[in-house]
Every structure is written in structure tokens, then in C-alpha cells.
Amino acid sequence: MVESQGSEQVLVAGPLFLDVVMGPLGHAPGGAANQAVALARLGARAALASYVGEDAAGALVRGMLAQEGVRLDALEAVERQSVTVSLALDGDRAMTSFGTEEFPPLRGPAPAALLTDLRGLAANAEAVGRWRREGTWVLADCGWDPTERWDQGDLGALALADVFTPNEAEALAYTRAGTVEEAAARLAGMCPMCVVTRGAAGALAVAPGLRAAVPAPPVAATDTTGAGDVFSAALAWALLRGRGVRGALVFAVHAAALSTTRRGGASAAPALDEVEGFLAERGAAPGE
Ligand code: ADP
Image (tube, rainbow, N blue to C red; front, top):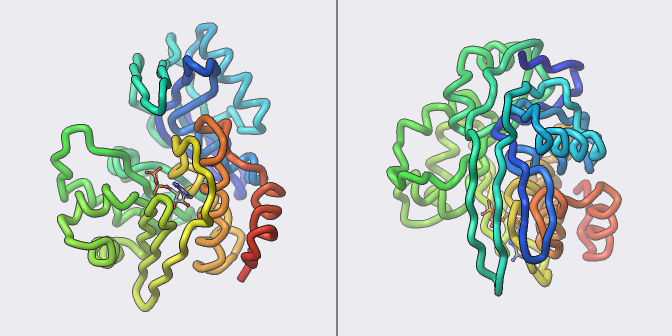
């Protein structure tokens, strides 16, 4: 059973993988763990609502999450750990996954915040609706639709979200809009705020009466895997700490840009002092 404890808890709900990368060799928790690790490195009380294997691979994932300070109490044990194996060569990536994309139904007391995708909201509409009435703040993201149908019906789940953070391609595909501005405006009509990430161009936030575009700081990006996850985790962290929308966007684009200068998904997420140092170095006021 998923139990979220403590009013300060930030719960990330989604599938959990052991990511094994070959060439250069490494392993790390992946999937929803990317956001949970990014939040924990910023100092949030992050918990993960996911299935974890009772096998050796699952023990490895648990150990790495614990070391990162991610709370394990909302994990649910299953027989086998889901695994993703990727082979990175000459800037290209071949990837194969086995295991489940599912994650456990959400139950228990309301966390301070919930991060999950549109599918997670739709599957847990009753629990999330109850949590929201108790004050849970909800960030929704989405992934690339493997069917490429981009069903408008998926967007119905935005009624349960406070912020939606698609990337540019996803926002355009879901809305069939001609421009990112138009896509963001349409999506902002379905939940209180839409924040579209635009890679090296940064991010655009649109809400009723608000439009804020923040460029990403120029960096030598070597691996953009998981940049979107670091962005949404950092945005949630900064908004929950009461930084205004623009301040939170500045913080999130810097955290995500910094993560692209390092290899890996969760392992590339920066710590709070690294983001603050980077902001100071680039002359951006963190709490503006
Ligand atoms: P996703 O990883 O979900 O596709 P994006 O590619 O839009 O999302 O990247 C998310 C965030 O990561 C951007 O808003 C930006 O802050 C940062 N980022 C990504 N690529 C770069 C880059 N080449 N240079 C600087 N920042 C980047």
C-alpha cells in the first residue's frame, strides 16, 4: 500500500527502473526515480510510489535510492525489478526495457505535493481528487505518446493538476497548435498553469494574466537525458518554497541546464548548493 507520510512529503508516482548503461558503463535508478532523486538532492522530503523488485536488482535500486535520501516507505514490492538497458555510442542510443510501466494505486494520507504524469492522474482520479481537497499541490508531466495518437481525452486529467510541464514537441502534438505560444495558452485553459520546456531555449509559463519566458543559460550540453525530469522537480521545489513563477522558472532552467553538462538521468541531477552556485556565477538572482 502506498502511504505518504508527513505534510512536507513530496510524492513522485511512476514506474521505477534499474537503468543499466553500457559504454560508458554505469547503473542508476531511472524512470520516476529521476524526479525523486532530483528533489532529494535539492533537500526535499521526496518519496517514490513505485513497484520495486524483491530480487537482487531491486535490492540495488533500493540501496541507491536510500543513499540519495529518497524515502522508501511508499515503494511496493513485486517479484522482479523492471530494468532498462541502454547502449550509448557516438551520441546515439539503443535502448531496451523489460518489466512493467505500471505503478501502485495511490492511497494513504495526502502528501504536500504529488508529481506524476497524465496517465497517473487519470488512473488515480479519486485519490488525487481527495488529496487536492486536503491541499495537495499537483504537478503533471507527460511523456512521448508511443501510439502518436495524442488523444485529446488524455488532457482531461489536467483538471486534477496545478501545473502541467510538457516539452515543446508534446505541447504541440497534444494541442495541434501552430506555435508554442498558442499551445501553452490552450493548455493553460485546462489547468491553472502550463510550463512548456524548450530545450536550450529554456521554458515558457502561461497562466491567466501571466506569461513568463525564461531562456536557459548557455552550457556545453553533453547528455540531455532526464533534463525534463530535473526541470519539473526543480520547478516544483521552487514553487513550493514560495519563489514566484519567474524565480522558480529561473531556478529550474539553471538546474536542468546544469544536469545536461553531466552524463546520466538521476545521477546528473544537481544538489541545491550547485544550483545556487551556478545561479550566482551566471548573474541570475535566485529568488527574484
Ligand atoms: P525534455 O528533456 O523533457 O525533452 P527539454 O529538452 O525541453 O525537456 O529540456 C528541459 C530543460 O532542460 C530546458 O527547459 C532547459 O532548462 C534544460 N536544457 C535542455 N537542453 C538544454 C541545452 N542544450 N542547453 C541548456 N539547457 C538545456
